[in-house]
Image 1 (cartoon, rainbow, N blue to C red):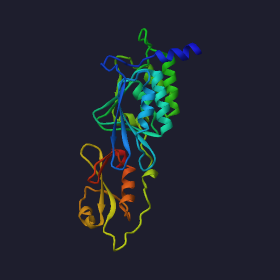
Image 2: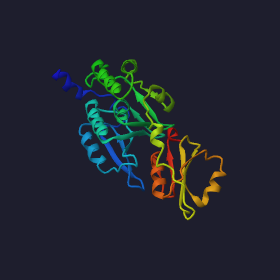
Image 3: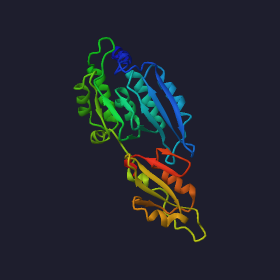
Image 4: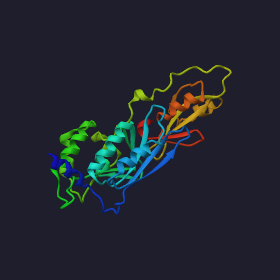
Length: 279
């Protein structure tokens, strides 16, 4: 068992055939409310868990107390991926693969699943294939079972996930878009109960500030969320694209907190964008 435990650190899931072999890089996209999105890119190599742990210390939490991590990686060392996953779980993060980006191998099988909630935007992709031994690149049943057991701990079917890994060659990964990933249970949006926000409070006649949070589907599959002041209420209610309204809220802070529960990206003009699941 000791020998097997050590050998797992030498197992790779797809390291160099996309040209990514220099370790992960981190960058922080900061929101106006002080929260942010930590972006992880590149191959998973030894030492990346400590890198991620340090980077997450710089990320603020959203209105519900979560940190957000966007993933763009083709995989790497399995042992290090499990170490990173432990960091992500302890930090209570939401994982995301954004449109036009990919998360494959150890990134998809381990890092993505470490999120308390998990989002795959339309146009993003998750890639899966068998775990392989570094020396001869042959399928490792032991490694696949470890990953399948981890997937089970994150709410997936262990036998189904194990079969997915066993039957998918290293050189021919299976790519999944948002719809297929949802069917597998790979994505996990926040439950509707998280989206209730602050209980609505009728505004007083003297208030002419922030009134409501309104939602409209955007053409790219995301959801446009707009904070609407009371003075503009009639104009926005006349726009049929805005199909749902939450509120009213007596203060800008309460309206913003409600919008941020659904937001991945934010701009200072008061518009928020979220995944389709949040709309």
